[in-house]
Length: 310
Image (cartoon, rainbow, N blue to C red; front, side, top):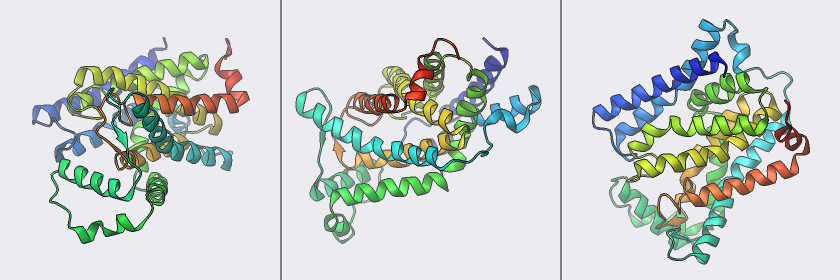
């Protein structure tokens, strides 16, 4: 393996894991704790810092190695990225509903797509976050709008946030994973590249999983589940990275996913973190379905993905 890849990974993991370890030393343990937001936000910049250091200090390649150029600019990859991003939550919600109906005792919970169910779920989420009980008059608008319209609004809001306030944080990861690292291994066969990035990306989350990210109460099994999640996500990110030729679409997709994940919790309840959650088995199966459709529809990418030579 290229020594530059190993050096980048050592620096990225070293920065992010050190930040997480410092947070744990100060007692940060739960994804609902205020300190967690600070620790997780700071750790996200580890891959970007490693990429900048490797590109400018060691390789002397500058910005060209990070995929930040926009020439030639093409609208279609951006539109495809938005379409993929906004489809994720609805597809996973539909999959969760089917799994819950087929396996009612398995831990997939339930999907309640009604106004009253939405209000009840908002109350539950507020209580989990330690917020005071919400007054009934403040919950009125939730009863006034159809749940589908609220979901659509949340997804469109996630797109706007991904293009603005979330963008710097998403670049914190994407300059590393789909910027520097992708550039170093772009010549690998597609399946190998996706598998490698997916495993590395998933393991990078391990300290955050340990303090409650995505799978609270399941620090060990959560790491394995996170690796599986990142493996299926790596296919979608690899596709848009290859299609666009730069890292901005990756940051956009990452921002949409992070920004819309909360909308899943508005309609899905009582699911086990490892099964009935957007990052659990239901989410992984939904993402796998979307990835399969992408590969099926995009012939040129499919042929490159399974080619034995780059």
